[in-house]
Length: 127
Image (tube, rainbow, N blue to C red; front, side, top):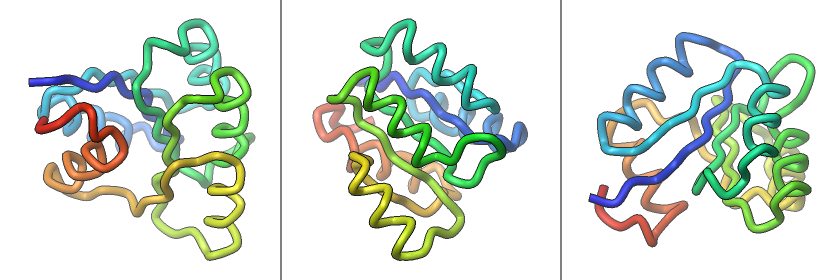
């Protein structure tokens, strides 16, 4: 089973724990972070170590869109998604214009996680 290497960022520690467990349960390798600065440092140190970067949008200090811009500045070909409980049309347009591949509603189930990864990384195949 192919495995994606995923960086997941959300300022809510319980959510990072749950999402990490869900993604690992379907076979992916996950590095979870609650602080954008730490996630950016990890990505910058080894940008090719991640197939997919997923960030919450609403976080203290640095929005998900700003985080995505920094990730894409380091590695323009990175696959970046914003997972949010709610983003209006203007925020979504700004994210896509910044190079974010997808703005998705925060997945709630294992199936939604699997489908999200399949959509963003079709080369990973069935996971």
